[in-house]
Length: 245
Image (cartoon, rainbow, N blue to C red; front, side, top):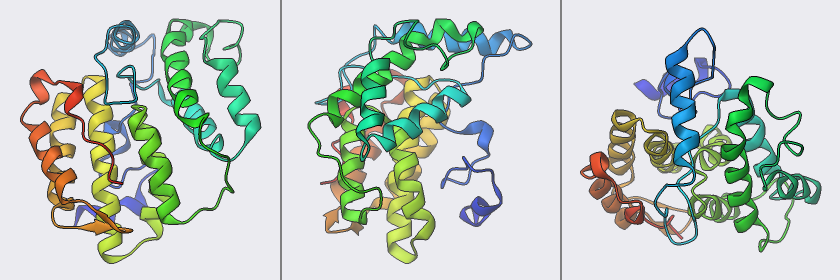
């Protein structure tokens, strides 16, 4: 079973069982790989032109290269319970070069709009939410995941839910895996990886049908995911369903 390989993968391994190189993150810019650098540049250009993603999110936001992507995700999750982290997000949100010093290498300066956009989106959804202790119940974590989902921060949804998936068993583990697959599927779509998006959205829909998690019915959400699979090639981001609540 593909899921059983997860524990042998690297720290950023996904519950979809795919190899790390096929995860939600954008390719790492590398002057030895001009094609990858061009892909990152294309994502920067899309930040200001993406269609609205859902009801709360103003933009569809691709992920950053690996190192700043992971560091920013950790900061966003810390901001759920740490005012200092929220202050740092506010500082990053304008995307100013001076504020981003220490976050991006000189050759990554062109990625400042991406980092600022993700920080702004996080600020919008986190500011109204009260701080809470780091260790929360699954029900509370799903509430946080819903806020990040509505902000279009799908990679962060994966990062938030993965520890709960890792510790879960049975039907709870299956449902969490389906939600994570859905989140990573939409992040693939934002990054322009249509085959990856199609595969993960479809697998997530299949896994969630007929299930419930922490009192949340998942069947309608699963049906909406399935409908999105057929529209991946010409996607309307208003089709993204609300996170189960």
